[in-house]
Each structure stands twice: as C-alpha cells, then as structure tokens.
Amino acid sequence: MARFLHIADVHLGFDHYDNRDRTKDFYLALKDVLKRYAVGENVDFVIIAGDFFEHRTIQPAILNQAKDCLMLLKDAGIPAIAIEGNHDNRPYGTVTNWLKYLADDGLLILLEPEALDGKIQYEPWNEHYLSGGYIDLPCGVRVLGSQWYGSSAPKMIQTLADAIEELPKFDGQTVMMFHHGLEGQIARYQGALRYNDLLPLKTVGVDYLALGHIHKSYQEEGWIFNPGSLEANSTQETEFDRGAFLVTIDESGIIADLKTDYTQRSIVKLKVKTTGNETLNEVEARVVETVQKALKSKILDPEKQPIVELRIDGTVGFDRLDLDVKSLQQSLQTQTNALIFLLRYNVDTLAFETPLGETASRAHVEQEVFTDLLAAHSHYKARAPQLAQGLIELKDLQLQDYPEADLYHFVQTLLER
Image 1 (cartoon, helix red, strand yellow):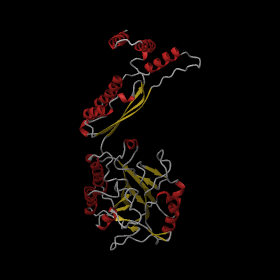
Image 2 (cartoon, one colour):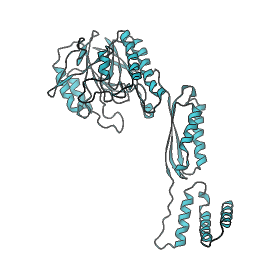
Image 3 (tube, one colour):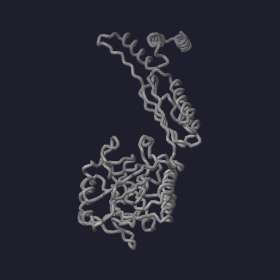
Image 4 (cartoon, helix red, strand yellow):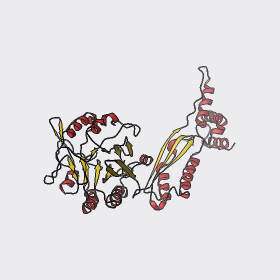
C-alpha cells in the first residue's frame, strides 16, 4: 500500500490584483497543505501535476517561497515529483526553466519523457544526471511524467501509451501526471480532452491519472483524478470544490480524499439586482444595506480581511455613469476591511421609446420625445407627461427671448407643481 499527496495548479507568484498579501496567500496555502497532508500524514511522495508557478519568469521572493515549501518535504524525506504545466513550461528552444533549476538543486524530481523523431521515449530517473521520464519508488508505485502538449494532446496520448507499453514490467501501481483538462467539467472551456481520448493510457496500465489545469476538483471512472487549485485564482472558483487529494492506492483500489481544510483567503460574493425603478440614492442604499447584512450575519468577517465581490446587475432609471463606482467601492472596502473589494457594475439604462406613426405632428413628436426622456429617469417618471408639456412651454419662452431670470423662475415653478 502507498499513500501520496496529489496537488496541481499551485500558481506561486499569482499577482492578478497587484497585492503582495494576495500573492503571499498562494505560498501560505501550499505550505500549510504540505505541512498538514504530506509531512503530517507521512506520505510516501507528493506529485505536482503542473502550474507550480504562475509565470515562467519569477521574482527572487517567489523562488524563495518555492524552496521554503519544498525543503519541508526534503527534510521529511518525502520526494516531490513534478511536471510542467502551461504556465511554467519552458519556451520552445530553451533548455531550462525554474522547475529544472529546483530539480538540479535536489528539491524536486522533474519527470520529462524525451521526444525523438516524433516518438516518445521514457528513460528511468537518473540520480546522477537528475533527469528522466519515470521513476519506480520503494513504496511500490511507478510515477510517469509528461509535458504540456497544448492542442496536440489528443494525438500525443496514443504516442505516450505506446512508449509506456515498451517500459520494463512493473508489479506495482502506476501513477501518471498529465496537465490537461477533461471535457464537461466547467462551462466555456475550450481544448478539453474527451474521456475516450484518455482510454489508451488506461489500456497500458495507468491506475491513477493525475490531472491538473482545470481549477475544479473531479474524479472520473475511478482512475482519473483532478484536485483543482489550492487557492482560488478568481472569485468564480469559490463555486468549485478544490484542494489536494490525499490518496491511498493498492491492489484493491484507490481512495482519493479531497482535503480543503488549510489556510485560504476568505472570498465572499454578494449581489444587488436593480429593476429600473430605483433612484441613484436608493441603489447606493441597497448596496450598503446588502453589505451591512453580510457583516451582521457573519458572512463577512472583517478580521479575516476577505476578498469581496459585489455585483450590481439589472437596469437603472438614470444615467449609469452617475454612480460614482470608485468612491462607493472605496467606502465599502473600508467598511468591510476587505483586502480587495471588487465592485462589478453591470447595468443597462432603462430605455423608453413610444412608437410614433408617420403622420404624427411636430408637437406630438416633441411631447413624446420629452416624455420618454423623463420617464427613463426614476425621479421624474411619475410626472413625465406634465413635465414634458412644461419643457415644450419652456422651449417656446426661450424662442421668444424671455429673460433668463424669467426662464429660471418658470423652471422652479414647474418642478414645484
């Protein structure tokens, strides 16, 4: 029997919000996972199925974070075995990258099958040269690597299967790392593999296919496993189960237990739906009320410095640009003590357009145009017909060269009616 930890999509160096604390979250999540479920559970090995880093080029501080985490495993005598993902794979024509650097430093085993004349060849891991495509571990598990194949992955699978079939016979279980996603797991995802695409790997003896790339956890048919990302790369990922798989594997089968109890930044999503009948002040009041309710119910905990996303969707009866989004966002961030407060303002201005016949008179057209403009504003909507008539009268007074003082007095009287 063997026990191991399967992680993927660590994304050390994540910097989408240009916030050092948020970047540090990804390091803290990885370190806590390794402490709890690798060292704490005394696993035989850890596999990292791609996207260990967010970028191909990393800052010294991010490299130090990676070393700090991997040293936990080295000090505990736990091998860390990795492959490249699309985020950290080396550009075409280059011979090294930061994963290779960590492998050369003895902190992980980077498994890379060789490609020769259109064929894949698996060489055993060589401790002297620190290279190879697979490794047979003392716990009775063979671990196979792969590379990031992009859109050519479906064609490469059979080539990989052919190469695996040529390997020396192995009596234990076989684990293969493959950084690609499976079709049907998340919406609007292009380039995912179909289940049948992967079957050649099962045919040649892969017992546990360790996937990455998609940040949602899933299992398929008892042999395909994807843990998802450790930290949420976006607020959308709060809707997914994701974490790390603590796996037990032997001749009787596989148990992959998804672990989610570790250090993660709290992310809270809120929503306000507008109908077009609210005034600007009423919309702002509803937003503040929504946040206050979340605070009172403890959905939002200021002590945890959460990431908050509040979406305003629907229609508004005023010019959508009248809402000072930046000022409101800053105020809400202060109220919630949020590390990051994202105010998503996605509304349409309520449109009014009365159909007019071809024989409509100029006066009628004017009346309807003014009425529509006024009705589109929630403050004037109830009195739109009367105010429209007043605007026509105001226009006539202007054409008669009435003094500005008289025009101003007329408008005042009109609004006070």
